[in-house]
Image (cartoon, rainbow, N blue to C red):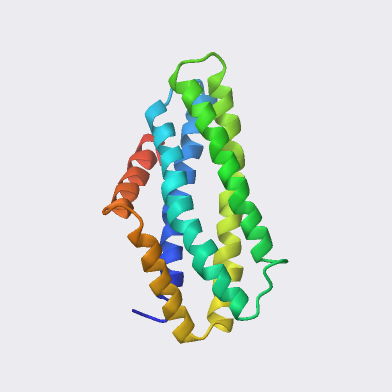
Length: 186
């Protein structure tokens, strides 16, 4: 384990989240072009965003990483932590909208295609920007301000968060990301 194993873990999760967001973009493109899309994939994307992006990834940041940063001098209220926490809340709200739209589309409700597109677009805007902030601002800040031993403790905390997930959670969601990407033509 390296001193930066925690950051490397989050970075790897970012890649999977971005792959799913790109897949959602592809499904929205299909709908814009008048083609149908797999409603079950949309519903699975909601599960992915809740279980992987939020309960697995955001939980590590909110419960372990951000408090460690505060303990090493980064203010909780202000940039960047306050903004990132706000974006986590916004992501939860947007995923709720995607769920409503996906259920409507799955049920074949008229106009649900537009609802799905409208639900995906803000997710497409939020996540790449959010991940850029973490990759380019937060992670270097952690490497600079948090001593190596504390970074190893962050990783141990991440492993505790992971232990709350069912066995095979990462593998299941990596597989989903690949299926979504293929279905979206990525």
